[in-house]
Length: 338
Image (cartoon, rainbow, N blue to C red; front, side, top):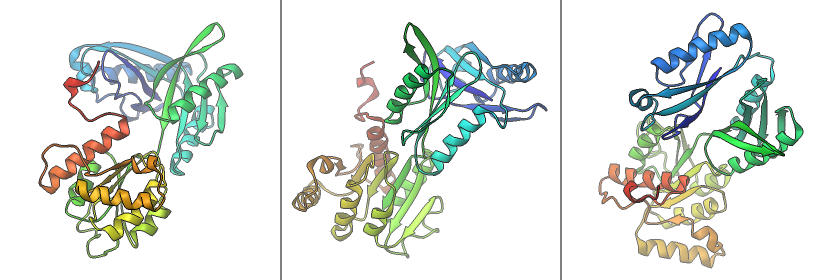
């Protein structure tokens, strides 16, 4: 198993890319998108299988190769290549992470970058599996992993233990970022399509079966028909959930908003004017909804791009939702502090 664990000199968005190479030379996945990097990784994988020992590759890339894997300029990448025993600790760790994600929970898998291939799994519920070979290192890595569960991206971190500093790879596993849309409207249709392009798990909720149809939403992962507020109360909305209300109907929006705001949804956007938004929030406040929950509501929904068509409105909504999820303001990149 070959994993891209670090990039230096540019954006780290490709970190976590993975390739599998078996003893017969069959390949699944890719560390990059092909080319010289993958060719070297395949060669190293063959050597790793022959030696039954891991290797950490460090490769300097030119501009062209760097651009091919999503880096904006030349830099250095590190690839961890490890032999995998189907019954070994590495396979058990990845299996545990998979089980946690399928149950709707997050987990962090911590890997040693030198010596014997070891894994420590830290789950969202506080449980751990495996070891990095030292109890003090396990404790320090667990603390770092818990911080990563709160938010962040996979990557290499330096963890001090006593007089030593250990370089470890922290890989965050989480359920797919989910876009939940209440209201199967004309804006919802391009919103689902664009969400799919971004790799989001898309869910459409509506009480009208003539609107919430597979014909109107062929790309939706889930279409739920029923009382929206009841469905909202039963949905496991968490920190990986982006929620948008598009029904533009008070009798639907108010009970749905109460349910959504009681969850840990990362983003809550509501289609409507400022005046309508104030009326909604004032009513919810009178119903006892706390101010810290009300402050999460984005109404009017979306970034100001001058959108007028359903497609343009959908684009502005997704842009704002992703910005909020990433902890960004949504302003121009040129105004961003380096």
